[in-house]
Length: 326
Ligand code: NAD
Ligand code: UGA
Image (cartoon, rainbow, N blue to C red; front, top):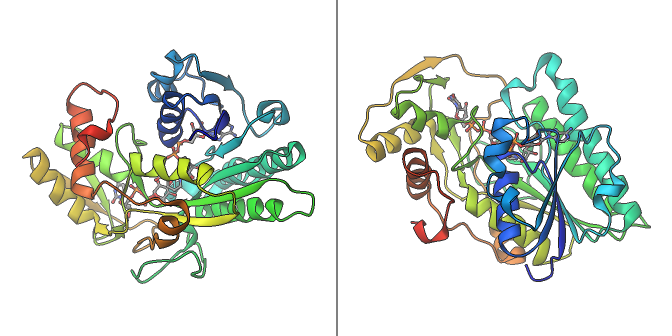
């Protein structure tokens, strides 16, 4: 972290972005956060950036990266953490795809053009486990074939490939780490995602609509682990590469409901609905490359992470400290 003086975080007002910004400013890094959701007008953005906005190390720039001037944002940055994008797998079919294409692909192209032109030393880009597609449940290494099953997955593979192509240009002084995050959860998780919905249901929220039979498995990754991997990708090496960032354990939707019932002492109401196009049957990270090259490994297992997520939902909504890790 001591190598970082000035960082740009795109998608700063999002779930992962908000946690990353907080961790960086706490470590004394000057952070320029960019997002088209402005915490002055958007309550979700405000919640994700509450603490960061109180720090003198944080500057927030409300801007749509589809058409704003990018170079001025990236001037003098040691690293760009490019997290901005449209993240949901299931809504990426149909008319909304043009928004995915613009925000996930065109925006990435604009960021990389500017980063290479300015000679920004490092770009860390948020890719996704969804680039692998149907795997059969065995751990995916970064060398495995990619065959995304959703338009979203296609857009993330395109974004990742664009970054690698720019890093490979003859005149490029910019190296890239593309992080394939696996289903990240924890406090302030996006409202469309499973674990938050299950825990909210224990508090009297709507019953959980289980897509398909509930046997689909995910490598659920706790937010602090995702953030530490992201920082390691900026600091541990300047080699260009792709890294799986996942806990390395797969659990089904049914497992998540059972763990939540044990944790909360509540029966979680569920209702089965049709499986969703694009939802892969299983994800599981082989994260040995991140261990070897980044010196990173997951610290929080699913039961421990869900406990911390639950404590945050039910208690004081205070920051997620490492001290309460289990
Ligand atoms: P999020 O929706 O909470 O955050 C994304 C942010 O990007 C939002 O605040 C949004 O306003 C911003 N954004 C989108 N388009 C923009 C544009 N044109 N200009 C400026 N800002 C824009 O999502 P998240 O869960 O925090 O995911 C962050 C990134 O990580 C995304 O790129 C997503 O694809 C990727 N990812 C997330 C997960 C996960 O489990 N959450 C897993 C794999 C990959
Ligand atoms: C998550 C993120 O939302 C994506 O941004 C990210 O790219 C992807 O992880 C990834 O790993 O790359 P997803 O795995 O679908 O996508 O995460 P959840 O929304 O938490 O869903 C997990 C599982 O629960 C899925 O199989 C989904 O079908 C199921 N689910 C989700 C339900 O059955 N009901 C719900 O209400 C929500």
